[in-house]
Amino acid sequence: MKIAGTSSSLGVMRSALLIVPLMLVACGNEEEIKKKVAAVQQQAEDQASKAKQAAQQKLDELQKQLDQLKVDATDAKAKLDECTSKAQASAEEQGKTAEAALTAARQAFKGAAKLELANVNKAINELGPKSAKASAKAKAAFQKALQPVAAQQKAIAADLAAFDTATLDTFKSVKTKFERDLALLRNTMLVAKSKLPPS
Image (cartoon, rainbow, N blue to C red; front, top):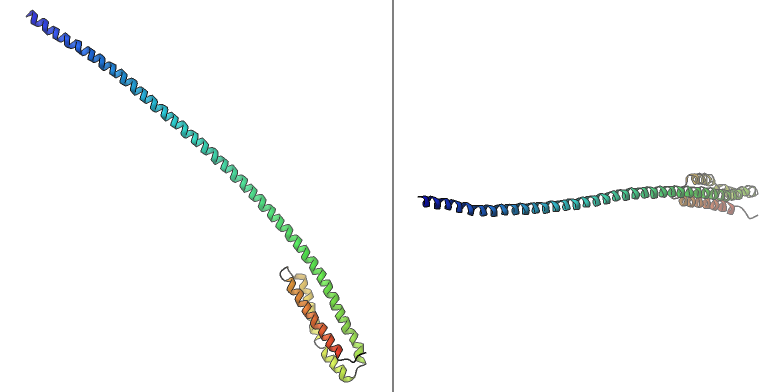
């Protein structure tokens, strides 16, 4: 009995001795697993940290680019405003210069037109004394030839007034109309003069 009890005790001890190394091995594996898990966690944290830093760096770069774009847009708007302002000032200056030139042209042409009209009117007036010496038939023909003069002089007066309001677009047509009306008046004077005998 004693032997059987001893061998049974020995069996239990042997089992216990076998379990201890297994436990030690298991404990050793657990420590190793913990170390590996910790290493993997650390590596994951490092990668996450690097990814976060990279993302932050990209965000910072994008923010800098956005800020630069805002500055560039502000500069571009300022330059555009400046160019627009200069162009507007230049256009206004050119407009004033053109208006001054047009005013000078109006005055110069109106002065020349009045002088031409005065010369034709003087020639018509000089025909009056000559008609007194003409025969009744010649005098009647002369008077009849002079009938359009009043209407023609009225048309020329309107032409002269039109010079005051002529624009760059209408100046040429106003000038042409005056020249045509003056030519008609001059022609009327020549026709009337032809009705009188030569002096």
